Image 1 (cartoon, rainbow, N blue to C red):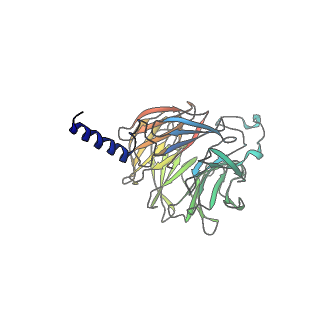
Image 2 (cartoon, one colour):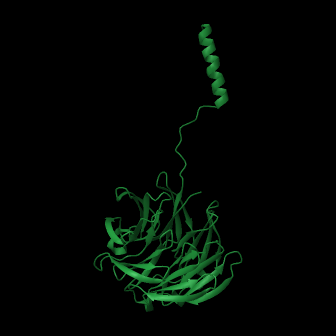
Image 3 (spheres, one colour):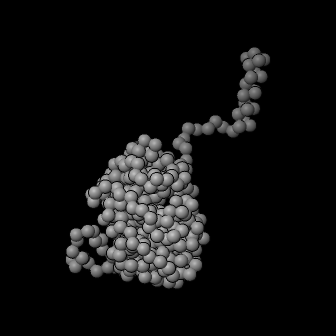
Length: 346
């Protein structure tokens, strides 16, 4: 070996020692995960966003539906219900009695991947939201026409408020001062003053209102009307509806709604319509629609707003949508009857 080769080898060995051993090839860690509640199989599907593959399936309890992440980003809350599933057209007199022992809000630890406890939350909890400071839960109780307010630390129920028949969607305003609750039976939205813990107003919207989403600045809300094939725009300063956005005929069944991080678009799932509609929030007009799967209900956006996820109940899968092209890039098998979906960064 020449003197030059010896010097070159010594330099290479020194560099290797300084930098450590050469890295091995491995996939990059995902930046977030997708969590899906499966109403019929009573479990949670966990999907890795880097591969869009299922990484875990975890038992939750009976009929998990509504789902939200806690303020600490380490806890997920899930609405559980012992009431039998009663889809449209079913004779409810033929159904078994409700199992009230199964009702509650499951507290799921993301790191341990398990339910730690179940909080009492009134009868048949379906959807809910957390207070802005993360200390309270506001829960819709369909069977009792009420909204239950729960103190998270103690698990104590501090109020039960009448909010119309068959309450459904529950969403706080971005400033946390008010909670909006939809009432399917009354075709109305009830507004709870968070500080006073009381209902301060209600107003009519389209038939069978389902979900609510706010612009990031809180200036407007969008309320889906399943039986009205429309979305109602609400002026939140006046706390009253100002416009209805028609999405077509009654085969279109608006269900879930989310707003993009920049507030420029609202995305609406349409149940048996099989599509997601895009609404331009500057003009409050639909600008596009695209097929996503069978009866999409719950939907969620990736943290960067570039990817949309829809829970498709009858086909037991989740559609992954590239919003730049408005196309489904993958369908991920979930449990039986996927209902709610959220994204959560570690």
